[in-house]
Image (cartoon, rainbow, N blue to C red; front, side, top):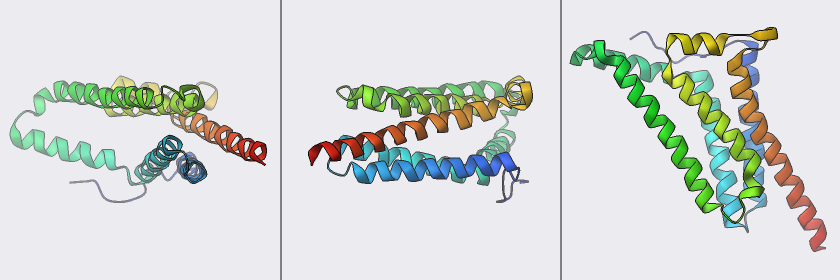
Length: 185
């Protein structure tokens, strides 16, 4: 096995992305705390904080490479390495279905407050799209993510864009909660 626990993306953009994940997780945790009397808001923002924290940790531990390598080893040992594209396709569909289920569950749970959470859910969709694309790990998909028109890589747009939209949604929530408290006085 060639995977080792080490910094997965030691570049400046890698560290900026990790910092952005962690700062967005932190502001999401603040939103959860500020919504402690609102069960829906508390759960929503708490889950987002956890999700973003895990994405930040994964960004630098590169755990998906570990799982890819373990999968490759198992495929070779079990004799189905030649059919790995089919397994990859099924895995991508599985990850996509999990994301779709998460969005559907969120819509069902938030149906009365949908507009309140539209920004972070949009960011979540962008992040899930990025995760599905990365999970595909097909050569032409990797080329697309590394494509950099005007010096901006496509994976930065997906990853930082999705996280930024969630961050913006958290700021809106913090301002809404602040205005709500001022109105209560």
